[in-house]
Image (cartoon, rainbow, N blue to C red):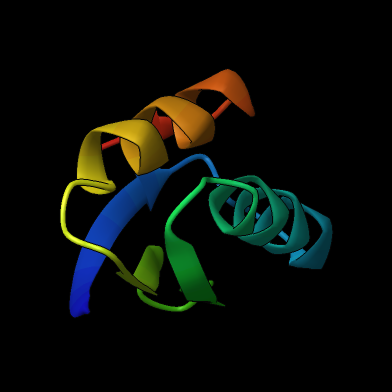
Length: 66
């Protein structure tokens, strides 16, 4: 299992954070996701190889991956 952080642009409120967190957690192989509105980041834990799918899920939810 690996843990990594992804910068996300466009999160402004708790609803945005929840939407991003749900999108990331729906990715196969992701075991946990924690969003920080303050730092505009999501910390992801999961199997190696999930990063591309996580970035795509964030984009599909309407947010920009930095």
